[in-house]
Length: 418
Length: 164
Image 1 (spheres, chains in turn purple, brown):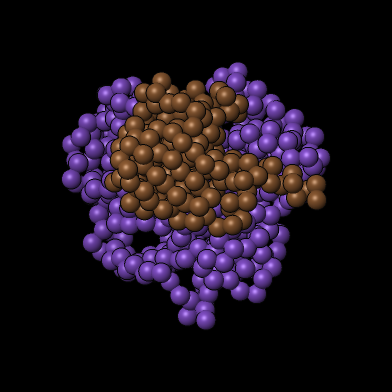
Image 2 (cartoon, chains in turn green, purple):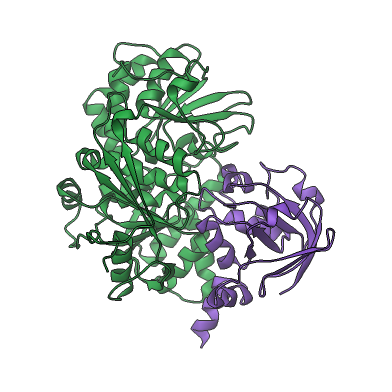
């Protein structure tokens, strides 16, 4: 009987020959990532009763949620982590000047196909774009991983998503995954692993595949996987020399469900307030006024996203009643965007450029919303109060929809503009 | 493990952002976390709740962010158990790891009203609604999960195995 990607990768990481849905395995992750919540992880770790972490090479800490610190409380938390990193000799620590964890991980060679990566962030699923079984866990569980190097996992059932045909102009990976979330709903993939196939997935950049896997969390996915190909290997091997094994699903693997999607019908999508599965066609809400637009995040803050924004904004000004915030996903992305002239285009258009990090996405830091305000955002969550006031609204769309709307001062489709 | 308390009943898809808002994620002290429990969902929660009380919810409780403060703040505020039709997987793990009892009981939201008095036993899955005179059975938790819960969470459980 054939196995899915999730079954094969988990079996290997647990040191067993094969695995089936429902099996409980002790899995030994290859990488354990935390961001500022490493402060909470280290606090719990110190209560366990072991003096050293299991492997200082495999623990990765990346500051991104509140960079630079917005309060003395955050500053104290970040300081405690820096002290812990030194005391435990943790090799891979990225301070406030590198970028968002889900972008920094692959840029620095920490994401390799066929491996298991756990992170204290739900959007850790992003790394499935590289054929890596990557999933989110809590801080206490991470403290136990730091102590023991293992955790229990139940092998998930898998859902296969197969695309047919090509994207229309103005339609992107973000629109596809929002459409899928709208169809499967917020809990449609809870406890499950998702695998993506199809011509459009093969043609898609690694960055766009990351969008699919990042947002799969919003339908509950435990992991979201794209089978590695030449593009994956080019990216990974340019970032690391650590050997790895590509693991793909067997042709006769068994799936809970197979979903076929015809891309020729797909138009720009929006997740309307206040849930990510409240998905509508952009055309259905066109004309809704906005006060803020945000281009950035672990979902859509990569170079290709900024490029779309720059193309739309070239020689134009944003609407006078709209604030446009732009945050490159990492300083590497930022530097490339400067070289290509995108940052100058953004400044000329009236945008505010913020330093790489999570920014306003989780409502903790820069660019929050007042009661009654509405933001169109390229991020991944729009829960009530997510980006500031509980009386504000967040709508999620592709970078093209966000920028086209920022220019218009209201929600508009980017079709015919890009 | 038997609990007795009044029920705070909520709907489907309660996310961790409304249980514990992102603006407080720099808080690592459980007693401080408790002050913001359910802040963006139910402003009356903290004023009305008493230690031992129980949360009853629809499907997919605890979805969204992996922040374990969502489970810690409920436990620290005195909630004894969360019963839901289903849980989001990260919240499910966090609750067990922090020693916050959970029960999965399809159909529960239809049989409990806000304020009902419940008597529940997570080890057996028995739920008795004293206000309505009805009862239900939650799914039995796997033995190794019960063991972690009975040890008080993953860290005490781990400490026990390290001492052995």
